[in-house]
Length: 112
Image (cartoon, rainbow, N blue to C red; front, side, top):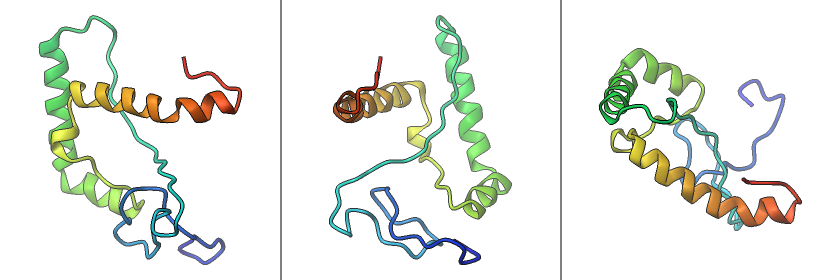
């Protein structure tokens, strides 16, 4: 899009992406919210204190200006600090699965 070889019409996020002059799908009248996201995973049974240390390290990394600049270059938003926890990610995954399950089942795919 930056070199005009492809044309963007909308972003599939609830809000516009800073630095990208495109409306959201909702602004275009289509209730379609899809995004890519990343999580940090540990083996089942990882002690809670280790999980907390990993989350703290992730929050610290996401505050680094160099990383934030790289995210901005790729038009990627950085998670809010309050969202960087095992508890939040577990809730988020459950909500995404519940939201997308009907679409996945209708397509004859599997979500389990």
